[in-house]
Image (cartoon, rainbow, N blue to C red; front, side):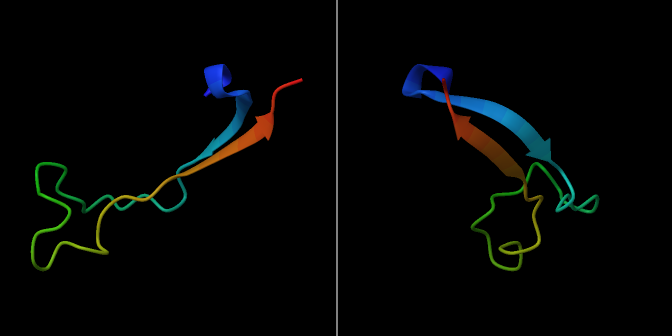
Length: 46
């Protein structure tokens, strides 16, 4: 995102779901809401 004027300062994986089948379609019936989640924290570049 540096090209857009933002710097990544933190990547959080505390919403990770170890039971997530990474080969499944996230929109498939019964899968939605049970997949890995992630959080990226950006600040405006100086």
